[in-house]
Length: 67
Image 1 (cartoon, rainbow, N blue to C red):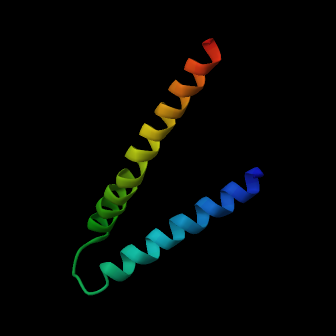
Image 2: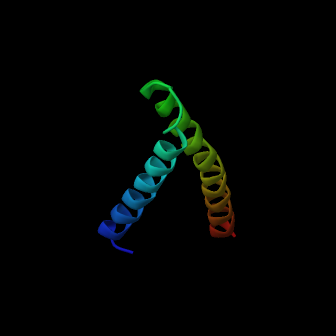
């Protein structure tokens, strides 16, 4: 994929998460700080497995490269 494709994919994912969080917080009386905290928590739930998968991929890549 080209860089612009990755950019649009990431942009659409972020927009979807933002819409999801706004609709989840629409009936509450929380502040924008609560919204940002919730967004960061959701991103961490995605980032932790992604980082783990990246580490495993690099480990297998370098392990097979040395053989």
